[in-house]
Length: 532
Image 1: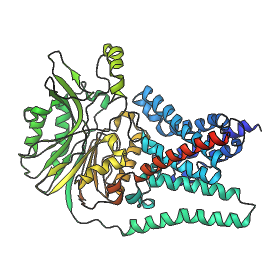
Image 2: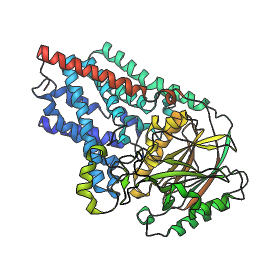
Image 3: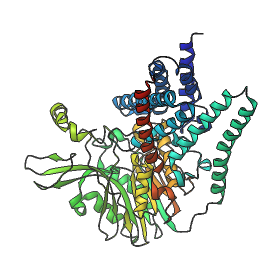
């Protein structure tokens, strides 16, 4: 068979293994061999002229397969968004692999593998915090539905999982290559076995022995099951509000501490400066009046006005009278006689919620898109991860909104600011009954392990549930169902190593990979080493 066809088949196998390992419908352990076909293709072309150009089509094809099969469901919300997410993300991944090939050709096998690990971790770190951020396929996310295996994420975060997966793939591949050399084979096989067994054993022991400190918080989560495509304008807001109340009231009592609604549960845009005069807020205030300590955390669509001359964000829009206003996807805490506490979602979905590179491209946006009508992804944000304070029971809640729950260190910032538990308000119905909402729930399980915070999750539809501090899902609802769940979770005030230091693996990898690439460039220039 022609070698090109062999390489194409191997690239396909890698892509399929990566996809088949992914949360939602996958078998996570497949990830431990998923990169091996790509490593083989890399070795086969590495010594040839223009090795990178020869290998790139196969590498890119493999990553496209992975991205398509795991995130195809985006197209049910936005075909354009799906195309961007799939093909751009695959391209970024392929560039990382091309850089690995260059490093391996210049420095040899060992340093090449070190380069692969550093470059991939650096890529994942950079991908967390720019306008096209899409960390959905961070390798460490693959174990999200296997909390027994990754309790040590409380130390490393999910990038520790990325490091683990790459190391195991590399050692399995090198072990197979050494099958004719018994001594080297058994040495490599032993190291590979330890790489698998030791982290799993540590995690299993931690999972079995972890005990939550008793600090009970009584929570009710509501899943109204409102069609998001009809939510804004087609389904009357009063119907949506009454539906939330009808689901809630039978589950409320004097012991209930929190009632949690999903993202944008109050769909009518609300002026944050006059929440006390808003009909929906006033109605909810009356619902909780018989229960003095009860707090409601709900998603809202809100806006604020800014006087002429006031500093405003690039997302703000100018009115004819000279005032600016900004729109927010927000959460608000409502209590009996308490000041309203508001949080603005600040990890926004590129496109639907924020215009990428707005500072530079705002003039183009105004010139080319204003005639289309509507708002083009320009929600406001805030710098701090503010928490909702409940003085009645001395508890602070992290108001995490939907997409924000896939960011580990970001969620850790709420905990640094005192959050004792995480309240996730989300709307998972945009994609229909497809893997997207299952994956998003799975990633929330990682946040519970990393922060050792219990989670109360209210989804518009999808899966509303509670997640304990070990990452176990409790009382999950069914998709496409109106439901209310009530339960008791434990607050926690312990700060994990990961919460304290964040994505330190990614930060270190970024600096080390930059140094590695500089040294590679210097060696390439001075020793005229071929790297193409």
